[in-house]
Amino acid sequence: MARDPSDDVEKGRWGRRDIVRAVTAVPAVAIASCARATPSHDEATRPSRLSPGADAPPRVRQVRQIVDAQPTIEGAGVRLRRSLGSRALPLLDPFLMLDEFHSDNPDDYLAGFPSHPHRGFETVTYMIHGAMEHRDSLGNHGRLGPGSTQWMTAGHGIIHSEMPKQERGLMWGFQLWVNLPRARKMVKPRYQDLAPELIPELAIDDAEVRLVAGTAGNQTGPVSGIVTAPQMLDVKIAPRGAFRLSLPSTHNAFVYVFEGTAEIGPARTKVGPAQLATLGEGDLFSARSETGARMLCLAAQPIGEPVARYGPFVMNTEAELQQAFDDYRTGRLVSEDG
Ligand code: FE
Image (cartoon, rainbow, N blue to C red; front, side, top):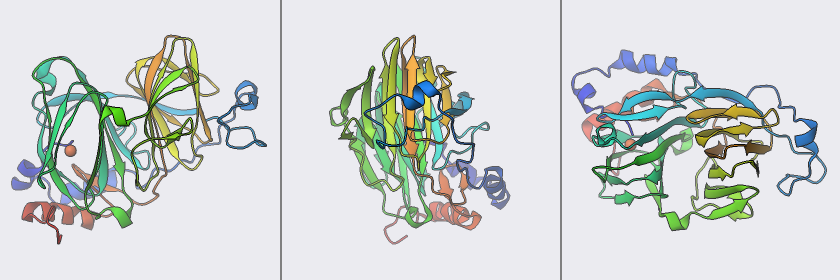
């Protein structure tokens, strides 16, 4: 999702100076650098069937930063809440953005996201309620209903629209942006459209888990072939319940709570609705909840390259960003020979 840049392009608002500002406004690379989490005795020594090794106790990830999602207007006037990709947290390599759209007021979502381009990264749409219709300039067409996911690798370039397929009722879902490394930014676009029944539903500890990507409970999610080896889970913890999950220590990770309040990590840091918590180093994620809570749990391998981003394009350099605008203007963004 992104506003249509064509108006700005035509009016010259996305000139060289804007792009330079965009490149310099975002930290070049956000890499985990905080002190290693120190698990409490209770959390660190308890045996776990998910622990990565028999000898060493798991290192449980602490909350490093909490970000409140901010009201934002995107597309043709969709009201949503942005956590990752906001001023408070511009980037958690390789994650670029997380938006939650959640409203039963059609005025908040009906305008949708008309035709707009993307290049250089991946968009992930995850629906809780309602329906979104997707169309692109190559003729791909899909309808995302409740519980479904679309993992779109924009690569070299797509021009698409994402429009609500309902006129009233609750529309609730998420869009996540995941970066691509330099070597994969110009690959052929690829879609993974996953109907709800393709996403495994697991019972792990005191939680109901939908496994979109990665592994959990000896199962593997349906998303495949993603270079950053992501884990993506929708985790619903029962009241007075607990949940533990092995996460690769190589990955940057965060959780976004969208129902109830969860206590995260050995310090039991409280994270409430519409709050994102980035996680420190470790190989185990732990959460519990008194009230019951539901959250997205994300982890992926950081890329460690410079990020140049503006609007719907995410590249490595200012020159590549300018090239993306030029290609969009001249029709080469989506052409086969690029
Ligand atoms: Fe989009």
